[in-house]
Each structure stands twice: as structure tokens, then as C-alpha cells.
Image (cartoon, rainbow, N blue to C red; front, side, top):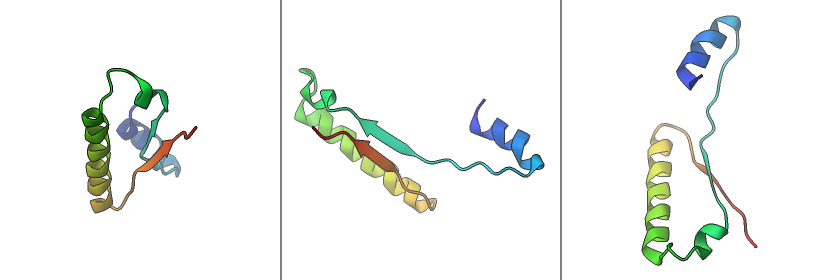
Length: 68
């Protein structure tokens, strides 16, 4: 079920749902032959934009990256 459906089912019973926006990249992403600097830059610019929009709504993106 999606978030809206869950809210409609659970809130009348006293439950509240919270959405935690998060992202993750695996180190293999940077080692893949087809992933160039422009693609990595685009990914991070997109994540920065998403985080900026979330902050305007009172939230924040939690981003995880495994470091080797």
C-alpha cells in the first residue's frame, strides 16, 4: 500500500505515520565503466536539489554512502 492509503487506515486508530526520505549509493556505482564524472555530478546535483526541496517542506534527505 502507498503512504496515503496507510494513513487513511491507521490514523483513525491512533497511529501516525512518518516518512523518512533517504538515499544510498554503493561504491560499485563509481567504479562502473559507464559512470563518468558528468553522471556522478548529475546524481549529486539532483540529490542536492531534492534535499533543498525537502527542507522547504520541513524535512531533510538522509543520504548513506558506504566508504571502502
